[in-house]
Length: 309
Image (cartoon, rainbow, N blue to C red; front, side, top):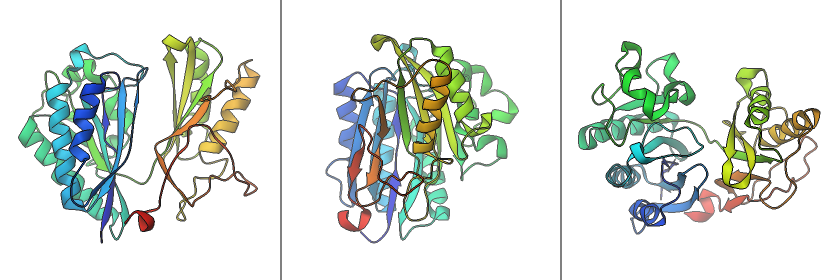
């Protein structure tokens, strides 16, 4: 492959294995498209797929998967701990090799137009593709979630960029855009008190005065009797490293542990207590401030694009 674009679509299905496989099958066996990773979380009731490919075949595979999700997922019957506004919640495009942010933006708009035309699902452009500053942040678009979007979408400031100004009755709405690499980092706390996770997340995320380029929220894992903090550093360094402690995942973990200790809680120290979700280049290190390699549970690795293609 000469030009490589990445896409990380998030689907609102993490429990029905048959539906999950039908969605993921849309990325299998396609020329110039490579499925790198997919993972589902039953507590979040969410599926995250990581796929790369040449822009045009990648576009076609993503559109097929979106159509399959619209067909299979009914958000009226959906429940989970992760915020969601659509059967396909968010579809980011990330330039990887011989592609630019401008090309990722153009691709996102092309896919958005097709989603609205083919499936009748309203689309909001976000991040680098956003058409207004208040639409850049996914959390702002998704506020109110599927249930609240029925009225929100009728407001002039929240008219979708593509599609009808009416929530799809079962598939909701979707955010599509271009962004830089992002890694979700989950930390389990040994408490069932969601207010503690929320308070720590507020201190960790940038909007609360915490880490630069970091988003965070608290979620409840009822079946496990604990709560979880989800950190999302939304920038990587030019050489592929995750940001340093004051700016990213490892720093988020350290600050989250410190905030937790002050409140009498600390992340569980068993397998799966804290993990990076998604893929990282195999030959690039997760660094602490001194340059030492940091070990984490649940880190998924994949080869760099040069090794894959």
